[in-house]
Image (tube, rainbow over the protein chains, first blue to last red):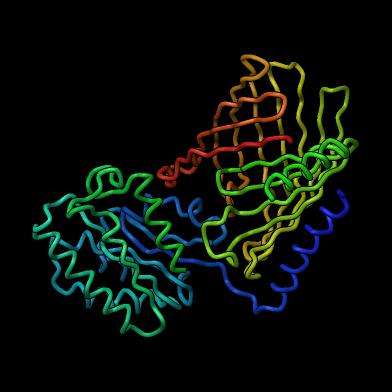
Length: 189
Length: 194
């Protein structure tokens, strides 16, 4: 009986090996570009089978990326989650975002929507965020390559208010908030 | 069907040694077979939460030896790969556990490890286990072995609870690099011997 058990395991593993040898070798690199939300995201734990490369700074705005050395993301699939620090001044946001994508030179972009903050449903920030997210979706569709817009924004809201358990301070995410974010990003990779 | 599988595992276990099921570092499930002599094998699998081809599976052999019920040696050569062929890993985890005195155990591990994308690394881990009672211990240590895939130096501390058939180790792991302080983790290791 133990021999059968071992045989089954070895057959499964051999099949997997043959399948992997028959496929062109893929690349497991995955770049993340972001602000404090990405900085606080334990990407090694959440994406354990990837070689994650992270460029994230607290308080970063999208235009700041232009001065970062992100050459290790060139030609790699890249997840980008930025924009909440631009909400105070959105002039030129989309142009800066497009310039950042060019600067990063990723092979494919997973553009994550700006997440909601602890604001009233009809607040200025909320309207700006929704407008910016609509523009980011359009950018993902129109920018070179087959990019993906990941609309995480509604997952953090309930009846127009942020779900408090997903946030630590109304802006940064709690562990359960990061679980939500990780799950939706993983589902799109 | 579940009962049948359970009965098969149970009968194998009683006849030929132990089957051990468990979870390591919250993200991997494993099954390990240990014969009643000196050898065994294991299969480790990243827990499904992505597409199957992006999962990682690892198959390994285990050879173990206990001296005077006081020092346990173990060597576990292994080979693993992500199922889309993006990378493979190979290595040999070699460990020694001093179990005397019984209240204070010392565990050391070395793992020469090759990752086809990241290259070669030598991973080290050291642990002290202080047992308050025979079934409750405090575990602490340092390591540069990855909890997931990428190398990272961390220290850790946890509470080990065990009985005849199971062991559970919830632990906190903190990076040694202060730049990485945001990645303080709460992880869980668990195993159950059928």
